[in-house]
Image (cartoon, rainbow, N blue to C red; front, side, top):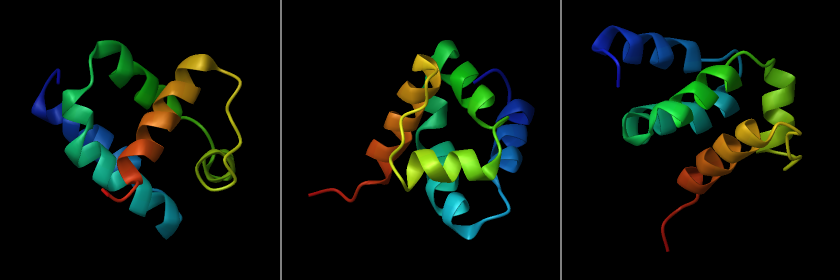
Amino acid sequence: MESKAEYQRLCWRSRRGMLELDLVLTPFVRERLPLLDAAGRDSYRRLLEYEDRELCAWFFDRITPQDKDIAAIVARILDSARPAD
């Protein structure tokens, strides 16, 4: 991570207006975001610019984003949200 302040900003921006999105994004940002490389963090920042309705379509309706970088971060978030076997 660039800095603690940047990490905290991303944590704050990950809080959305819908509990369902908070339950997907908050654990990811806490547990996996620090492990991402710079490109992955940039993709996550870009993801947060989208509206909640688009995020819901990607996370819950399993619609694949057209942008390949956004699709990759959505897949990583979905993978992290799956319960371990």
